[in-house]
Length: 306
Image (cartoon, rainbow, N blue to C red; front, side, top):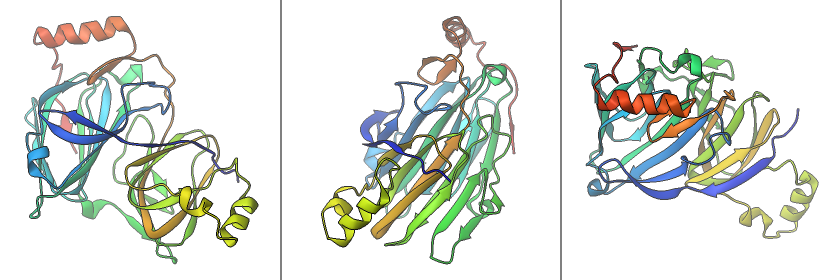
């Protein structure tokens, strides 16, 4: 087994989106090849309703899939095809925008005013960009969770892991999307398909992802000697960790444990022409999409919900 090196570890950036939602962006609107097929990842988390209640009013999407995962609070969603619903704590919505959809997402806090969720954008290959829109709404109770003997907990949203398969399926990127908690002081290894681009996003606690470029013996020696490496190398809340090639990642949980999303997907390796929520392969396709939007041709067909 080969350990994936840590290519980068960066803090998410405060960003204002929608009609005034204060969120943190881990990546997006930069190099689309860095985490191909993933384009953008936002952490919309706040305890002050004034900083999120205006939400994300009506806006278009074409050529991508959006994955919304709610941890606290709710998100009311509706679209131009007549679909509507409420995502609660622990729920997932996987929306394939395909040929085009107009929708809105309006967050609401829990009884303490807390709102916490994530949205990930995944690209679609050219052959599927104009496919009919589709929703997969997954309730928290449908998401399998595996608990290991050491207390490690893994929720499998999509993909197969530790003998369980997540309920979201038929996704172009063939992704693995896991919600992982590793208890305090536990070191854990997780197997990942070598050919998938992979990242972790920490949102609770702290830990250190072992880097294959640093010999483990040196780390152990420094930890035994009480040197500062063990503390200095810890990554915490709202940290994005991007991995290189290999078939395992290793994490050492800190004093409060660590909870993170682990996401992996098969690269599409196609040209990207991107402006806002519309992602196509060529500039000509992008211009056509905006022409469709201006001339009321954007909605091509009826989507369906599963």
